[in-house]
Amino acid sequence: MSLVTFGRHICDLVADAENGDDEAFCKAVQIDKTILFGIPYFHKRLIRAQLGSEPEFLHKLALALESPSLGRRISYPQLMFVFAILDDEGLLDMPLDELLTFCEELGVYGREYGVEDTESLRKRRKYYRDRTGRRILI
Image (tube, helix red, strand yellow):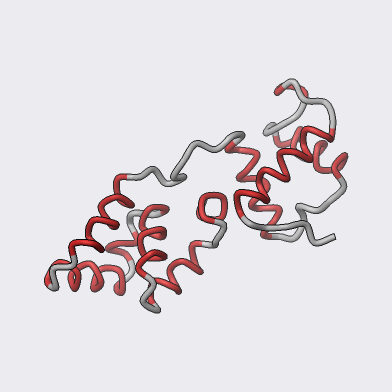
């Protein structure tokens, strides 16, 4: 979800947060609220903010806690999730006809969605890349 929402892996967000990036801290918490008490740095940072009276940080954190994990409405969420996995494995650049067959077999895109052509899938892949900041490698 963090890749689709913020264009970054959750591990990268956690690492950046542990290096003092409060924006990454809030993004990581937005994706997985259990991080706040499951990772020692996050728990310590929260206590430090409360004791040190850091209202700006606490306000940003409160917004992250209130926000849904995906942050905003995403078109074709199941398809975007499949794209994120394929992208992570370096397989998202497969030929569009193969990608369409693959997505149809998974039941996340294709004829049952009223789509039978690769052009619409190309647009969805571009949408994914625009949202995540990832570009085609080929």
